[in-house]
Amino acid sequence: MTARREMARRGPLPEVSVRSSDPDEAREVGTRVYHSHRVTVLGDASCFAMSLDAATLGPLTLGWLSYDTEVRIESAHPGYYQVNIPTVGALAATCASRGAVAGTGSAIVHAPDRAAVFTGWAAPGPALALRISQPALEHHMEELLDRPLRHQIEFELVMNVSTGRGAQWLALVRSLATGLADENSLVRQPMVAAPFTHSVMRGLLLTALHEHRDELAAPAPAAGASVVRRAREYIEANADQPLVVADIARACGVGVRGLQHGFQRSMEVSPTDYLRHVRLRYAHCDLLAADPTATTVEAVAHRWGFTHRGRFAAQYRDRYGVQPSETLRQRP
Image (cartoon, rainbow, N blue to C red; front, side):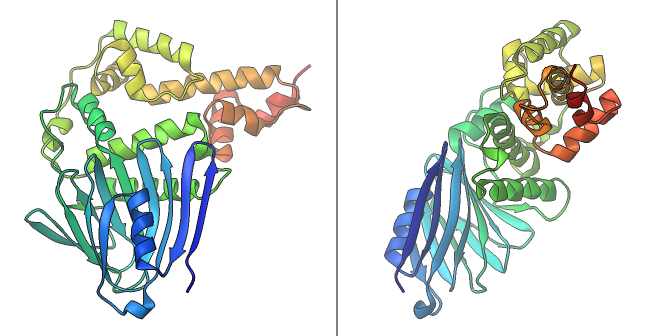
């Protein structure tokens, strides 16, 4: 079979869509997109084929990886954490002296400085493969802890993604993987992309097992009223930017969890909810001033970071008592 390779660059997201029956090409593509690695065919070599659909969004590279026969992959990935999630069958993984088998409902989390080996695809099917920049993920951990890390994060090898927070995190990752496959996806817009990537990384830190889990679960001192006031002013002035809670906390010189507790204590909302309220108000002002022949509700919603039209309409109706389309048509 002749290998087929398609490369496209749409905006800031380099994309790869490959299907190859050549093991050398499969290794070359996988190395370029993810990590240096070696592939050993354990199953029927005549059935070998690799499929990869992947894209990069800032510090994340996410893709669907599958083989048509059983293989063993040995990889090294300095500078990156790697999470592999089988959707069919199981992946058997070893890292240093640890070993585990992850079936559907589980994920394997590999550390950056250790060689990883995993075996799978005895039953062909896609696995979600997520590469995360080590500096980016550890920066998020430092912001959550409100202190510097002394060493890299030591994750448990297996992560449960079948129930609770794990299932919610997997749904978020799947949503991102689906969005990256669509050239018109809102995930490509900066107002949407930044919160999405932050949510994936922070969700992993708050869900997976690691040595900082208890510290993250402990209550943090709440930011005072003056800090919350500065945060509100910062949100008002920067609501048109792709803000996340960490940006707001950093601008106010406090930790993320302290700011969240401060908002809850002072206003009974989270910083994210307050940001959404402010953006909803600005969207309302834009709709009042817009020419209905020159703009649409969807365009205004997207400008202010609302990605789901039905959800935006419901939130708008709850706040203003009318549909956003009615406000747009009310222009004198």
